[in-house]
Length: 114
Ligand SMILES: [Zn+2]
Image (tube, rainbow, N blue to C red):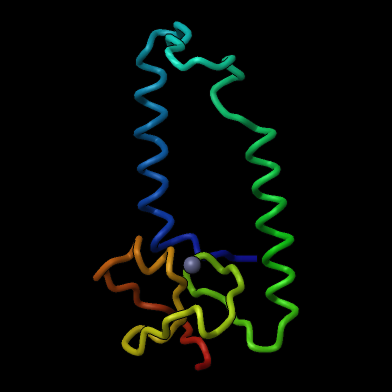
């Protein structure tokens, strides 16, 4: 199914590739570990999976509540009272996305029901 490929995701994509460029610039050498803990690879996958799992469990829990609705940006479920309805664009936005968006306007193809 077609996802929201255009719009807000473009920003994060360019952010990721910029970070990847910086990593590959290190000519394949392992980064110097200056932290006082064992180095477990470029990403902490165990931690990532665990936090993602937690997020999905939480999301399903909230989705099962009656007064829950989705954030129009990240598509996670929130209780309506925790969301802000952006009248101009016509969708709900959660606190995280609202902070990330700031005053930026995102025209939506389909407006969410209020
Ligand atoms: Zn959101």
